[in-house]
Image (tube, rainbow, N blue to C red; front, top):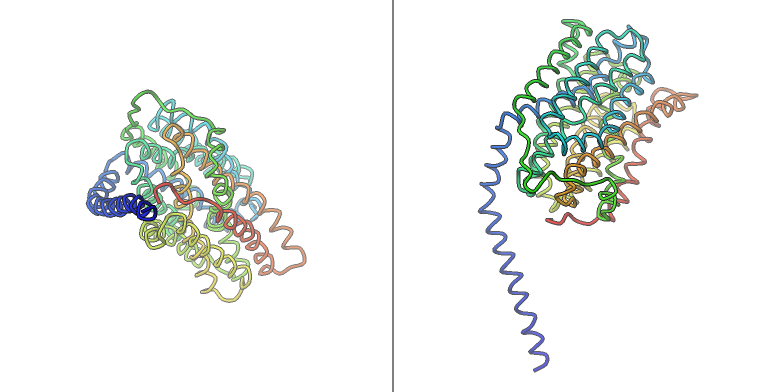
Length: 435
């Protein structure tokens, strides 16, 4: 009787679990079409389209130095080390203003925050680039542009987090990153063609006009979310106190560094110095990386479903990145097709940003969403900026007594080692709450 009582006691919760699972499954099927319709409606809104155009500019500006590096070397005397510093300034200023961006999103709303900063920072920074005559002018320019681009993606995430169900956040976040990553494509072969036709300074003045036009569109079309019960508040200490993030943040700090730094800066010098590439081949290599970034973001949803959870998708995504960097480290001069393919694989791992921020964001309580997503972004972009700065002396050190192929091999190892360590720590992280 005692045993039967125990068995009977277990049967009720077991039946409840099975019934709940079946019910949840049917609800998910029933909600799938509605969810997809909501995703589509979000992207059909003029405000989201404007934010996506802003993110196209953000992706373009962080990547276009790779294509311009031969021109800037010839006309301004800018070395690869100078451009590493310039590119690093974009990421450092971008990261440095993230706490202020989070405060401004809560205080003034995304519409005013994103339109004003993009116009002042992005427009002025592009103008400084257009009149640059010394390498340090590029540092100032990219620093200003980084400030201008800083609120664009966070404004979109802020709106998604407040106006859409949490279950849709990952799809919407990956969607805007996917569409916005077209900036990587525009900053490759198409930019080469435009510069050859119009000249690089004229191209920069055109970018000033485009940046100001997008800022005006954002001011006219973005709608701030309605906060019921007052505006949210939170602090960085509250975010750091979330134990679930402790083993995610180290990976997030190094995750985006390799794809962003190599695509935005080192791909072109690598192809030129190791493979003797001209502008056309540099454009093709960076275009392959850009296409990889765009395609991977649209495959993030199916990849997550195939992996079984967002955490497992993050693990597989970083394993691909580690494999690609290992190939570049061990075989930097094997062949042009292999190098371009490996660079493309590194580009594919750019999707890891959206995957990790979705995983980390799933642990944020509602009152920490605004400060939370900007703090997470600060960690990621700050990691890129630091990696860019340090890559400059690493490359100079690697050149001493080594061939160009050996120097770039050590540079790729520099990006590989922290990524592998970050992934090992990430294996200790928990699954997302809704996994």
